[in-house]
Length: 130
Image (cartoon, rainbow, N blue to C red; front, top):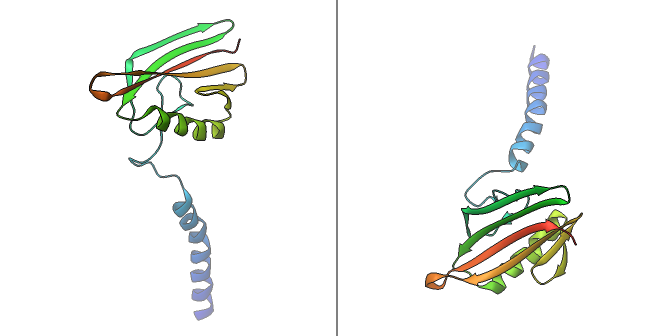
């Protein structure tokens, strides 16, 4: 009987090990989890920026989609450019010029405007590559 008990315990530990490893390595959604733009769902929203859903415009044309949206926050233009230059290539985008990225047959352009109270507005424009 002790041998059967030992075999049962070994089996239980073996069966539990993969789930314990998975629990340690699974993605955890938390407040620190990356957010993405609502209308360009594969472009991350930089921490510190807040998207303005009322500013979103979406057109679907035979040549490709055209999407514009805005986000704002109290960040420096250089910080935003650095964030997107580092994060977008991980999602398949290639830098074309400062604030301009190319993937497949689409171009993503970032433009900037100073807002009230020192806030920076970032405009994201996705369009077919010309």
